[in-house]
Amino acid sequence: MHLIRLGYTVYVGNIENLEIDFVGQKLQERIYVQVCYPLDAEKTRNRELASLLKTGDNFPKYIVTLDDFSLGITPEGIKIVHLRDFLFYRNFLN
Image (cartoon, rainbow, N blue to C red):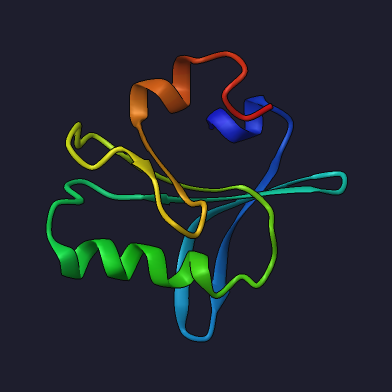
């Protein structure tokens, strides 16, 4: 709903048998969002990152979580953010 309110057309992405929870498209912009709680297990983190790393483009990529301990940016530029920041920070996706 949040991405739709921001004007994105939203669909589920599939890349090489991996799923991306939300792909948002708005004109020439695209955004990829994985949603995961918790993100503390390495196996879970690797699974969530895998599909985002396969996109082969430089559009913004996010993992949205309720986990306060795993926030930051991966070496590949994927932003791991808390749900409240994703939903309520006005310019987060701009």
